[in-house]
Image (cartoon, rainbow, N blue to C red; front, side, top):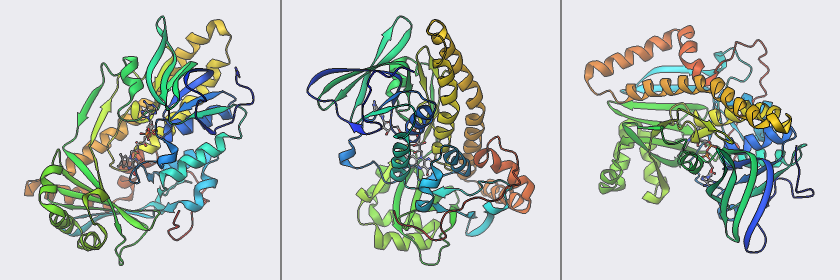
Amino acid sequence: MRSEQPGEDRCEPTAPSGSGTADLDTDVCVVGGGPGGRALALALTRLGCDVVLLEKRDPARGTGPAFRGESVSPDGVRLLAGLGVWERVREAAHRVDRLEIEDAGRRVLDVRFADFPYRYRHPVELAQPTLLAALAELTGGQPGSCTVLEPATVVGLLVEGPAVTGVRASTPTGTVRVRAALTVGADGRYSAVRRLSGLAERARQLPLERDVVWMKLPFPADWDRRAYRVRIAGSSHGLFLPSTDGTVRVGLNIPKGGLRALRAGGLDQLHARLGQLAAQAAESARTGLRSWSDTALLDIFTTDVPRWSAPGVVLIGDAAHTLSPVLGQGVNHALADAVELAPLVAEALGRDRRVRGRALTGALQVFQRRREPHVRRSRALQLRQERMFTLTAPAATALRRTLYRTLDASPALRRRVLAPAYFPGRRPDAARDEADCPSEVTPV
Ligand SMILES: Cc1cc2nc3c(=O)[nH]c(=O)nc-3n(C[C@H](O)[C@H](O)[C@H](O)COP(=O)(O)OP(=O)(O)OC[C@H]3O[C@@H](n4cnc5c(N)ncnc54)[C@H](O)[C@@H]3O)c2cc1C
């Protein structure tokens, strides 16, 4: 692998010195320092590749929204273990034992994760800053080097002939050009790399019928801290997730574009909406939610990008396939993309210079072929689930309850329905020695 900046700090945030234009040269330029970008940087440096990672957020201004990406599915835990990250974050993670769905005030489904025959079988809650910091720290000690530029916002792509050869980024001290054999768009649901590379042209954004208002509330005293709760009442539903900071993270579904109407009714209306789903959460909101600035809106859509790559450039994570928050799938797919892509890229970059470009293009196509079926299955499951949540007619909601109860009564059926989300592509594993995280919520 090329290393043209010997002695450069490894995975330390760097701001380009002086003003004007600076140039860097590397194997892989990763745009975006979310779970996908950071995991890819780690996986590549473990294989000896040199990476430059650009992140537009300013680390001096905090690590980003407190609401996002805290639920990590069992498969995400397995992937983190494979990257050597799980041991580092285990103590800070909060294991979840159950998924409980209540519809019209009655429990209709109670999934116990211990019943699944896999080594890593529990989802966990893990604050995203903790995860990102662990990924960054581990990247520092690998055979390949990683230079992190932050804040650095990618504003253009470098192009030679048909191929992308790097990026142009704006930083507080001037413009940086990063030249690379491969540029990776790990820059999330509104990806600039997707747009700038033309890969967005045939992409389809499918708005779902709901948006989600997120908030964190004091944890209701009589609730099990190890359960995910889904509460449904008619066509309203909410997610109630235990958070590592001891609060309950609530995702309240509202009609698409309905925030203005909700806000017009004041916080009392928000409390009333919560009260229809969970009286305890409404009580917590009355004491713990002081203003609308304690909430965040997530515009729910999925993005279907037919082609994830072009010569010299590839998309991963939300940039390639934005999903909905149902069943906490986004972080897992971003990690899975990184783990799948890294060895393919490292192998192609190790080829003779004359065939490297073609090898890389082939590797990117193999990557999409391997990953896309898993994303499609998750998306289909999420869309089915979303449709179930939005049913309104009494006969349809009665049928929904019957379906959940049928699932509840059959462990085999439960396994079949939930496995694509929580254990994609895995065979039952006799080894049940999962290194579980501590038994109480650990503030981080
Ligand atoms: C409110 C909310 C709650 C969520 N809850 C969950 C959950 O519980 N579980 C779950 O699995 N998923 C959840 N998700 C989804 C999850 O956060 C994403 O699927 C996941 O973070 C995707 O990872 P990523 O690395 O692909 O993208 P992101 O995490 O979005 O990271 C992209 C990074 O790129 C940076 N960036 C963007 N543009 C540029 C640019 N031009 N130049 C440089 N950098 C750039 C951004 O600052 C960001 O850091 C949630 C999302 C939201 C918004």
